[in-house]
Image 1 (spheres, rainbow, N blue to C red):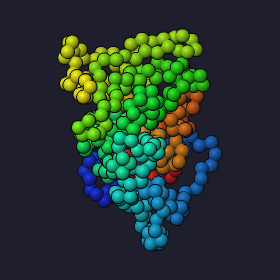
Image 2 (image 1 turned 180 degrees about the vertical axis):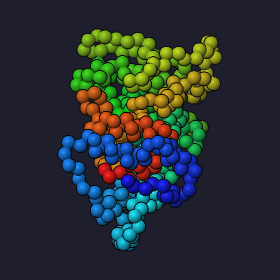
Image 3 (image 1 turned 30 degrees about the vertical axis):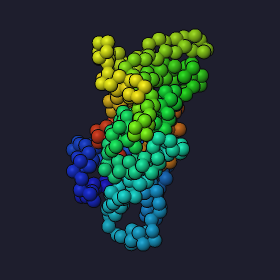
Image 4 (image 1 turned 180 degrees about the horizontal axis):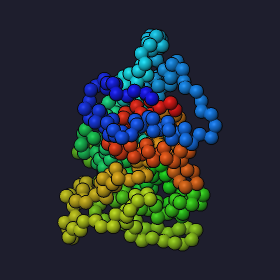
Length: 364
């Protein structure tokens, strides 16, 4: 059994240490060993042998920093005879600026898919992502900021690119929220239940659509910049072009999650912090988009999607693959493993390095 009792996090961040400690209790082995046990139990044939030091060195640099090691770094690692040299290298890379840069570039592609700049310029957006990973911002918080930010706070304005550079077009936003945050591509459920996927329903699409329908672009003429405004009313409705089945006044609902059936009531004229007008950005007292952000952390589908994407980041392939097609006829290759990773990600307060470190320490 490997020893994990003497590693040191180079930045000595207490929050990170606490998060890592949360991934295992005194009564169970480290997460990396539980991962390997599940993979061993599901094996239908012999597993590949352990990677050599040179193979491991190249892989871990590419996975955690996006570049191969320098010649000097390679020679130093290969010459090291310490039993824990792999653990030390993993910790050093996770604490390096190159890790934050690599994750920022990876998430840029995942979130924006190389869209042209509109309201927010790419360097500003990438700098925000890079700082988020350098500060080890919890992944659920990062995703909440993408959804809830309205562009008025300078510190969080870059996060508004996810919505602003999609022009707040509600169908585009609905589809991309479903894919990126929940791992479900609902595009074909906009007009009818998905014809090829039995468990993607039109009601799923419009439950998510109802969260974003009320939001729209607002141009601040004085500041000459795009912001996000929102109305206090507006309901989603749909009718299937195939069957005629319909839904009116659809309540907001997370994919495969509970319906938000009760919303705060405000009397006529009391719904807004600032009521929308020609040159006034609408800010309701209750934001459905903000409620979506608040609900993410408790969504099992959200947790499973993030865990699957972290695994895919390290292996080039998700436990569910493609990563945005979670559905019953495309089950995880290792269901118990995906459940374990999703649960441990939540226990670790959505700490990406905590989970990536444990994956990197596996025999897998």
